[in-house]
Amino acid sequence: MGVIEAIRKGFGVASKNLGLVLILFIFNLIWNMASIPFVGPAAAARPDLAALAVIISVIFILMSIFVQSGSLALVRDYIKAGKMGLGDFAKYGAKYYIRLLMLGLLIVLIIGAVGLVAALIVFATTPLNNTIVTVIAAILAIAIGVVGVYYILLLMMSPYTIVCEDMGVIESMKRSINVVRRSIGKIILLLVLLILISMGLGFLIGLLTGFASVAMPVAAGRVFTGLISSIFNGYLGIVMMASFTAFYFALVQKEKTSAQKVF
Image 1 (spheres, rainbow, N blue to C red):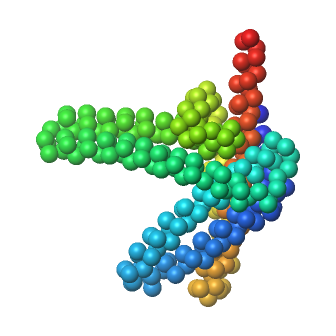
Image 2 (image 1 turned 90 degrees about the horizontal axis):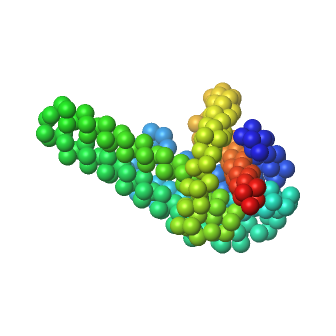
Image 3 (image 1 turned 60 degrees about the vertical axis):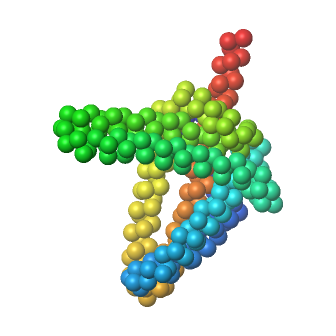
């Protein structure tokens, strides 16, 4: 399966499973509506709302992992068997929740560690006021950052290995590194194309939504924008998830075929 075929598959899965898109739409809509009181000049004038906004954001992130777990497993079922049962959403969400949560925390820790090391190198050498040392430190910090980004890219299939192959967290990370390393160019291309598609469609929809909301009262405009955004993100969320899932299965199948040829 090529990159374009994977993207087509992603749109096909989303278009044929609008019930799953509806679940993501409702989840996104709740978040968008809940965040309305925390945006705008009135909210900026109330620092006391900041703590509440952080709490709500944390709750949203924790809930989004549950939604990701259930959605990804259903997408897996559809790509493997040609059908999915929406009734299994909660079961799947609970089954993979802890593993995806731990994976997310580990990746955040890795990103934090890389950023901290790079920053410490720069801060430690700045007081020396030596141009050569500063340049070397900057180059070293950039190199560490590049290596960090590379390994984060290698881990981007980890959620799919957890759900599609029912692996543990560490095992899934190792599996992702092995799979992605062999086809990193195609995976980056898939990611870039999906991002460009999302940005392009998002720009057009945002432009039309902006024109429509101008004629509305401010509060109504925000609700309308949140509604359209929820539809867009719900649909594109499944498109991206299904595209990567289909491409992952294709990579695994290619790996198995190569192994069979060797023997």
